[in-house]
Image 1 (tube, rainbow, N blue to C red):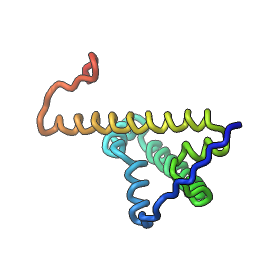
Image 2: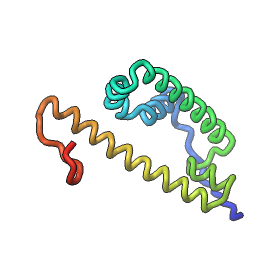
Image 3: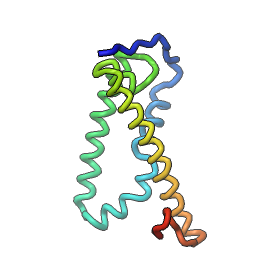
Length: 132
C-alpha cells in the first residue's frame, strides 16, 4: 500500500464560531429552503423524525471529522484521511467524490434559487429539455 505523506501545515486561523458557521452552512445549505415543504407534504410528521435522525448522523460525522483533524492536522481533508489509512487509490476516489458533491451542491442551490425567484418573476423553468 502506497503511503501518502505531506509536510504542509495548516494555519490555525479559524475559531469555534467560524468553524461552526462553515460546517452548519455546508450541512444545511440551500436544501433547508426547498426540501422541508416537500418532505412534510409527503411524509407528514415522519419528516420531523427523519430530520432529527439526519441531525444525529451529522453530529456523529462532525465528531469523527474533528477527531481526524485533531489527530492529523494536515491539508487535504477527507482525501488525506482516507489515503493515509486505506491507500492512495481509495483516497483519490473519496477526493473526486467530494469534489463532485460540491459541484452538485452548487447546482441544487441554483435550482432552489431559480424556484424561489419564480415568486417574484415567473418564467418557465427548464432543466435541460425537461420543464420543471
